[in-house]
Image 1 (cartoon, rainbow, N blue to C red):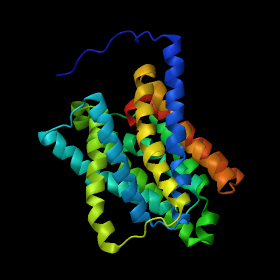
Image 2: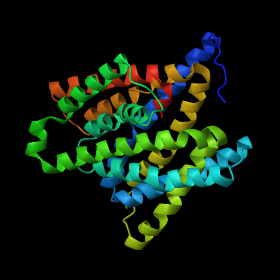
Image 3: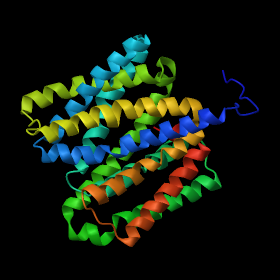
Length: 306
């Protein structure tokens, strides 16, 4: 049974709004730095499977401590099973696609292509009857399509097949993540954001334990590699998630979702500064079009935000 929506937006104190904006921006910086941390972990001797597994293991431990401190309980019954399935299948698939893409394609391009997921959420939601097409959404999808074509660039694909594989994996990660978002909406609303995230991360860690140990995937062998893994788990996972939810509570979903689009911009800037990645004028234009399309979509439907 649907509940009535309030006719006026809640009044928020200016100090709360400023703090909320800073928290969401901090979250975007944390998420955006993940690709840079991943590259450092690989340079430190870590293989993709081991790095992703360590991310989930360390993040799960920290999240369980956070839940205990805040006296929040894990969900039970069907909600627990649903979230565990989403973590063990959906989030593992998305993460493996994304982290593997970073070994083939530039980090900035991978981040921009991953951020197509609000577009895919919109397409899936309308295709399944959960939402409807509007002129604004059609225009946003058109912008995203053109932006993707410019970001990928037919010349780059023809010149380097490895880059093409990385781009394909980045798009696959976006598709998987969009399905994850739609399927997680109901169980997450029942269990709460942090308990749901904890179950998802813990399930992903458990699922990846067997293949990681069975294949003997290489762990980082340098101090910088291990520090990068800790950065992925703590800064780009736990702290980024907590900061986003804290900012969301102060800003509301629409503004929080809009500010979170800074994430791929952070990755592009850091990739340029730290990894010396170069971008063509067309790729910059394409990335801008993707971000404009995402902002239009999340303003119209904030649940497409992470």
